[in-house]
Length: 173
Figure (cartoon, rainbow, N blue to C red):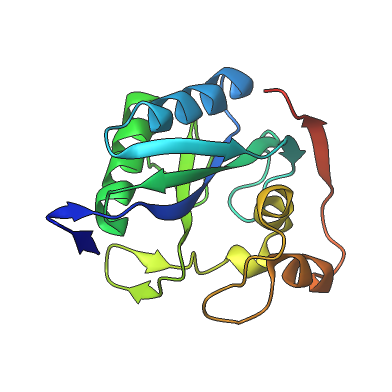
């Protein structure tokens, strides 16, 4: 969307995760780099949570997870590409599907956009199945509706079966 040649500000939510190295420093780095990205404004951060890995190889360390809310003039694909570049600068190596990672930045929602391409799927395809994503999202926008399912994020979180704990660590990270 553009007005007079300039894209309008859109809302986007990015999930941050880390289970290698200094997890707190890495999620802070991810948040700071997103905030410093041209065409992006950091609007809010969820609390920081600790969660057991979901899927992937056994023996991984627990994750630190959070969500940030952004206003952005970037398109969804441009924002995704910036996230991938930040992950790479943080030392992310994609050696194993759902394997350990220094920094993981997932584009969860971009306003009410629904997209499915080879590069990007919005909303994130497993968002509604993951407490470690929904819990921090609900810190920020519990009444936000999932664009594909039409239910609020709080309703989706409440409907999840019991699973691994999502432990709140701190709000001032």
